[in-house]
Image (cartoon, rainbow, N blue to C red; front, top):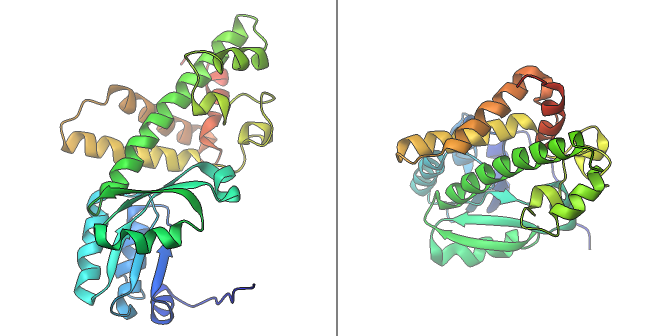
Length: 258
């Protein structure tokens, strides 16, 4: 079975031809432009259309888009995604969905084509909230894994042996057993390919910025999240912006006096 692929001139033209639209964009300004800009989706969207945004953005922007979509008779849901490039290739992504509960099954039917876990989180914006929390933890654990591996190597441990020990012990985490940041420890991950591909450091810095904004707005202490944000922003300024975020290991190795 083959699907017909059409390339349209603008998001508005896509919305005119389709009644189910999925978007995945780098940042909040991109989402605002694609949905409400001069050639945006909402300019030509059909009444009753289902609009699913899988970007990772400010929850407040998702709520704004939902209100704008409602005025046109369309339904907007946020459904940010997690799992990385490997899960995307395998169709094993996790989607965190925010929106009307009675419309969740319609969204799940579409998203299940790309992911094995499609989770309803609550109203619009809660999917973004879950994703921001996840990525803050991911950044913290990746930095912790990189620091730990670097320390072990400096103490004379073989990195593969250290990773094996960590992964059978209480320090085990996704960053150590699935996405190890040390070159030569694992195959098929960015650290085995000069940190090319994967999830760019600049995007991690952006997501950590979202986490810090929401932490400030809700008066939530996020000390390690704040430090992680500073580290990834520093990496962007030092030439790591387009490298995978696991390149924090390389950054730490090069920053003797950090």
